[in-house]
Image 1 (tube, helix red, strand yellow):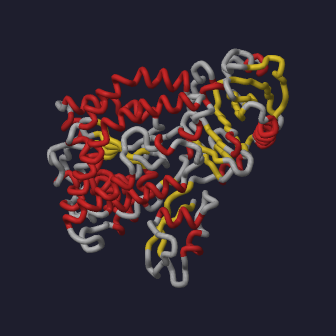
Image 2 (cartoon, rainbow, N blue to C red):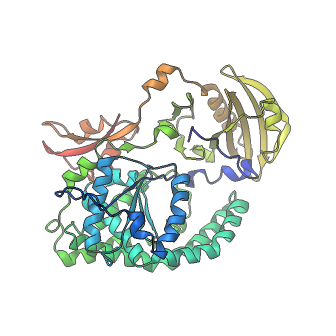
Image 3 (cartoon, rainbow, N blue to C red):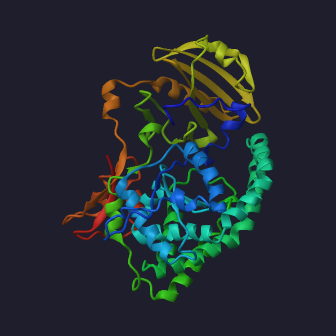
Length: 499
């Protein structure tokens, strides 16, 4: 959750619109690098071509240029690290030479997000998250993702897709805002997105085929595409929050089923040779490029440590009950727990400075029961609480004043689940407090650290060094592409998550 800008008040119904889609919210942010200034064995040019100059007369780039500032602003800024940017530039440069259009310029942005994602806009705007870089095990897997996105650019898929999206964007927004709190609403949104998926399925498969060809011709391991698709599927299962979604509504917007894509990628990779006998993985220079890269939440958004949320810039912390999952988003902190219990936490500027009971009653909560509004204290800070009901949900509303900010907790449970509503909201209120200067100074971000396996070390001993997760061995295997039962060898370089 961002600490440097006030969060906008939710439009209309905070209570009945915000909670039901908590687990589905996504977060991205970004960072760009110049591609033409880096070669692994050649000094940078003294007269590099600047992407803005190359693209200035490209009408396709105008569309990407219009969207780029919005993406950067909406997704929280850029992730900047010279060696990571150079790694991505090196890979992109080698792919450009063998692409469908070697003269195409690319503006590569590393998104400052733990999400596993990549996408492209018309004119050469390509985005990849640091979360995806963390999941990859070598340069060939990153090349597989970038070649796929570059194929969308050279085939002008982005322009075709945007034209269809523009026709449906208003209808989709209305559906999401009016119906998102019901199952029917979710399915209506899904149907809209599936229309786009049906339109783009052939484009995705075409980009896969072009991408594998680019991998092989650039000298990378062509089987990396299939391997990384498998890895993303495994991470998606690891990261799953609930199992109550309709399987037919998974991967709604663009991608065909993972087994289909994996088999297609393997089939086209065979044109270059047998798996394990062709192409370079680029493991060492890849690991060098991501060593020290930020992992998980950024300092500006606060940190999730198990069932605790902490924000050093705001100097606040709170806890959710055991068994809950916290998702730290740009617009709010979301938490989901058993029995469909959900929590939203955000903040607004306290410009008026009036009573908190008046603030609760000011109209931003639909279904508020005015007789339930109470003034109270939360760990010495002025606060107010209330109850609300809307649709099939009951809500506890808690607001706390700290300095010039009002912090807001909204806890939702299915109608009638009083026990869970009381237990969850009480835990939030009792644990919400200011952090001491010593606590904030000691709070450090997690990073990818590349370490060398010593004699006698095992998957278990290495995974014990992992921070930020209670499923240490499972995440360690995922980040290093290790199947269950795999062993480590002395001298092997592996990734761990540490401070």
